[in-house]
Length: 356
Image (cartoon, rainbow, N blue to C red; front, side, top):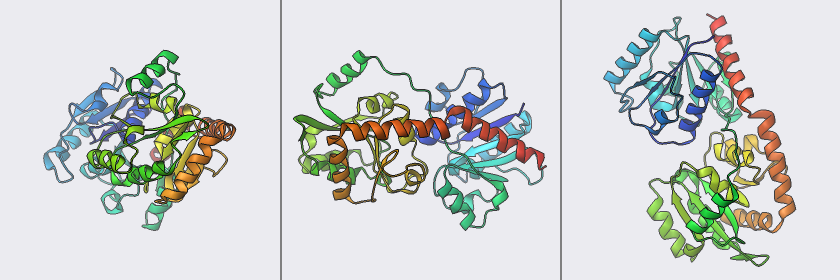
């Protein structure tokens, strides 16, 4: 069995945090020892198996020396074989001398500035594009591992629950629904999505068309105001951040990822798990996992007219949406299943431990 410690400094439940909880829980379920080092009172803690030991460290910032010392003490006391860090803050606060255990593996889910990661002993890139990004910055190829993400098993919601959501957000039963999930941040491209949606016919095949944007963030007020200015305020719903975000994808006839930057695209995997068709921009992460017009549909980044055209085409073609959804689900099961990803991590850890 491999003993590992996992460190993350996030408090919300974005893609990296959700993947963190899934991977740590999956390792524990396979009888591997796993230690979770997180921020106190974060939403992450409640999602971890009760048998997983947890240590809480503030991790105020990358220069938080007391937190760096506390992380070091936790690693000395628990003596894991591997310490895996997620995102910049946890990675920069974790320092392990070269040639000694634990081996420090830094997981990168985005195209981060590389200098804050060089002190790690090995790196996991969530997509081929991120792997290439590291190679271009001189990271050693034999210490970079491309391992994707997996999503939680999908359990369909009762029909009554989904009908209740429609009633809660005043969406008619016959309506066509476009769903987008993500942090309301400029890189997610929701301003462009609103411009595109404003160009889509308000009714398609005599069915009203609604947009649901699930998430919260610094652009919330600005985006809501923009929807009103575009004349689509009555057809856009803003549930905010929801633990049941996946149910809004279940409601969807089409799921959209409008990002200008995306490391992998967990929302795409989540949609595929629910057998929903996906329309995405050609951001590097989505373009790595979507084969255009086979398991999804790709549109240029920042091009509202092209996004609108693809959206309307897909909403008008039930058969095409079903085909994209089916092939997307096949891709998920073949390449991004829990077993495939967890085994890839365990193989990565074993390879690194053998090299010591």
